[in-house]
Image (cartoon, rainbow, N blue to C red; front, top):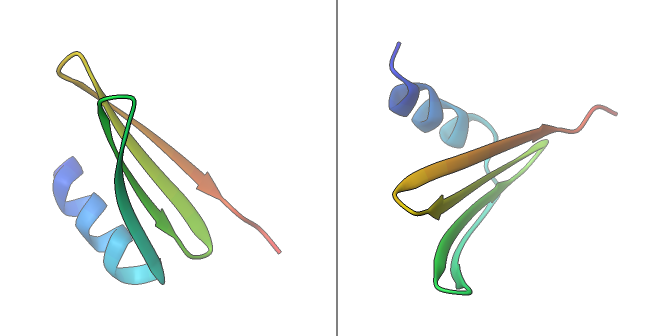
Length: 55
C-alpha cells in the first residue's frame, strides 16, 4: 500500500474536522478526530506528524 493510499484511508476513517492554512508561507494541513494528522511542506519536503489519542 502506498503512503498516499494509506493517508487517504486514514483521512476517511477518522476525520471529523479538516483544516488547511498557510502558516509563515508554508501550507499546513490538519486532520482531527481520534487522531491528528499534520502535514507541512518545507523546502520541497513534506513533513508529516501523526498523533494518536488514546482514551
